[in-house]
Structures are given as structure tokens and as C-alpha cells.
Length: 231
Image (cartoon, rainbow, N blue to C red; front, side, top):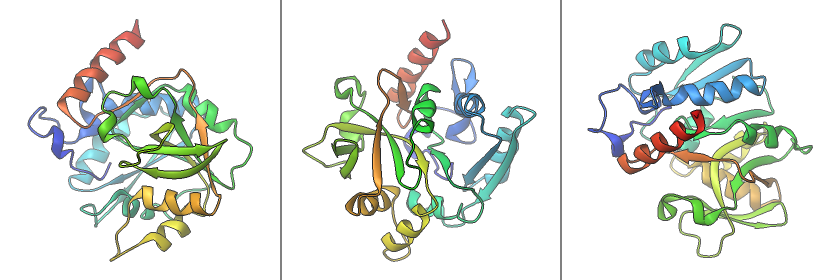
């Protein structure tokens, strides 16, 4: 949750993108529901600017039996790999990782938990390429069987899309540190390095639905889908 949501700025007056209302509820509340159904007891949130205010707004959305822990990222202007690195030492592996601006069905977490090799990174991928709302902006993935062999937004040869939902081993932090250049790296940089060493697996989400919310157009699409799912 450390980003500023600049592409949505002006379309909403909320303090942060995770609090944007979707079908009458804060965006992040849907993820919290899914984590609760998966048995998660502690939610760690990496926050950037307005972190205290954001954390104060998110904490009451959790179930009474869930613990909330905000992690401040002083380098929030850098890429999301740096944000994840701030969680090192705070989480116990294997742990879920999800973007704070994604809607997703809880069955995706079930598929991740069904994986037996938790020593590797398990990335939930969507093979329904034709259903992706903004394919140009999507993170593409190329797989071989269940192994990730390449990842990047500019991939020309790909067979899946990164949903931004992971089951992570402790070694992901080592890979991110190895990926740092000028003290900066993206999560995709770390995944790319893990894939090169055979430590990144693709988990097909099947017919499950998800949507990131980066632009006003994506927000409108998310509103439609969330309303449909509530029926």
C-alpha cells in the first residue's frame, strides 16, 4: 500500500487507493475478506505517505480475531521490490503477498495453499488472456509446465498474466537483495531471478476472477464486477 495511486488521482477524494469505494465498500476490504477465509490471522501492510492515516482507516476493517501491523516504507518513491523488502523480518514464511489495489476471488488463495512446494515462489497466474481488461499494462508471464521461465510487461511470447497474488518463501528477500541496482528493484526483478534458478512456480487460477485498479477505466470495470459478484 506504499504507492500514491497517481493514475487515479483526481477521480476520488479518498486518502489512498486501497480505500476507494467499490460497490459501497473500501477496495482493500475485499482482500481482507479473502485472507480471513484463508485462515490468515495477521495482516502486514507496507505503507508510504499518509501511512499512519491509512493504517488507522484499514485496521477497523479487519475481523476481531485478526491482527494488523503497518510497516512504514521510508523509500516509498522507489519500486515495489523495495516495499516488499521492508517486510523482511516481520513475516513468517510461507506468507501471502498481494497488491493493495487488487480485487480477487478467495478461491485464488485456496489454489495457492494447495501447492506442496512452499520452498519456491508460487505466483497465481491467469491463462484467460482474452479476459484481461488492459493487456498492454499487464505483467506477462511465460511458463513451461508449471515453471515460470520469463516475466515482464514487454514480453512478446507469453501464455499467462501475473495476478499480483503470491505465496512466498523466505528466500524471496535474498533474491530481491540480489536484484538491487542503486538500492532499487521491482518485485518482477526478484521473480525473474528466481525463475532463472528454477525457484518460481505458476499456479493457474482457473475460472477465478481478479482485477487491478490502476486507472478510472479499471475502477469502473471493478465496480461492475464487484456488483455482479455480490448478486
